Length: 458
Ligand SMILES: *[C@@H]1O[C@H](CO)[C@@H](O)[C@H](O)[C@H]1NC(C)=O
Ligand SMILES: *[C@@H]1O[C@H](CO)[C@@H](O)[C@H](O)[C@H]1NC(C)=O
Ligand SMILES: *[C@@H]1O[C@H](CO)[C@@H](O)[C@H](O)[C@H]1NC(C)=O
Image 1 (cartoon, protein in one colour):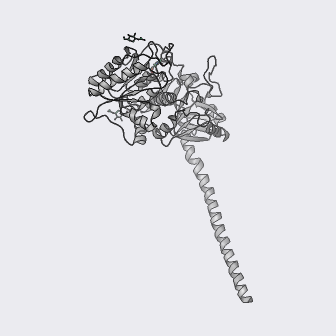
Image 2 (cartoon, protein in one colour):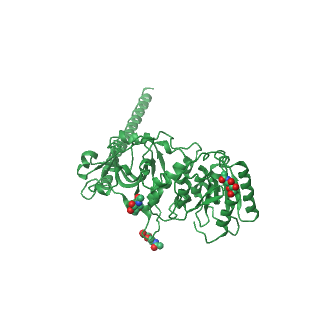
Image 3 (cartoon, helix red, strand yellow):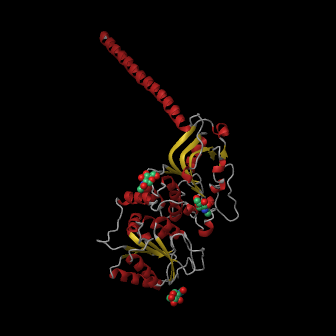
């Protein structure tokens, strides 16, 4: 009995010793490893990226002159404690801060949003170390910084037709060669909306979010919590490349006084036609798996008439318009689709837009879908207003995208060749009403002209 017990105790003891030896080996071993990689991964590599050959933080620049009021691309823009810093020994080479951003308040009559030292400062490299320290946390890739409240974000037209289209036009300067060609640019790594809580940028019709995921599948959309995280780590952050977008500043551009639109000033930034195509292709490839292409042999061009529940034609005029459009189909000029977007899935809506050559409707958000139409010498947007009423939302979109735009006032068509536009906005009584007149023949005449004359240009 006793020897047996003794042997068993010895065995147990041996097992215990072996167990502790193993545990301590792995535990201490991995502990040492973590310690070493932690030290070596952090400092030396990033310090080299962040400083110039004299070991100082790099200066801020605006690459390729990619700036207009409210849309400014920077390289090496600094952020500390919620304040942005331009670090430069040549402050005169930067636009006035009021042309870059504003206080992030809501737009309202009589409210001044002129930027203060809290939003942005220009500092000299000699003072940089005292303000920023000598180490930075680098956010590499291309960042979109939406420096404004959500007031005008949560709407399909505002998000896609102004913010994203406008920033993409200005950013495209970076890829524009002297010969007028454009090289593909990296998509944004992240959008940051510092003054938006949670999902405040999403629209009630749930279009903004899903299209973001197919346009930029790996791009995060960060909000106020993220911004607060960056403040709480008490670090200086540097954006390798960032576009700062601000609606208030955009409206200070002289062209805003002509067209009253956030993207007015971006029209003075010269980029090649087709600059939007990378985004359109990404959306269509990721959502549909293909890019609809018009094949004149096997199919007819598609005319899409978008009808609405609010802001509508006089009902008898609507019926007459549908009758006249059907005649075009019978004549073999086009396929005609009369649709209510709100009854279709998002995928169906975008597929339809991508197949459409002529998009027709009363002034309204459905016309934002022209973003996904194939630009061509025939692609056209026909926008019906109450007579004398006019606003530039969809005309400016069409000009960016390469579609010809027509405004219709009952029996009068308004269209402007490149370099000229309609003059003045006007919202007469009935602009948003349900009694908008239109003579069907005025619309069908334009459709015939656009589809039957091969030499017309957009
Ligand atoms: C245009 O210029 C870019 C560089 O700016 C060059 O890569 C490209 O090959 C040029 N294209 C043509 C058609 O000359
Ligand atoms: C338009 O752009 C040109 C060239 O970049 C510039 O000289 C001009 O001042 C701009 N016009 C306006 C109204 O900003
Ligand atoms: C619309 O045009 C028709 C045909 O020219 C005209 O008879 C009618 O008075 C116009 N209606 C309005 C409201 O302008």
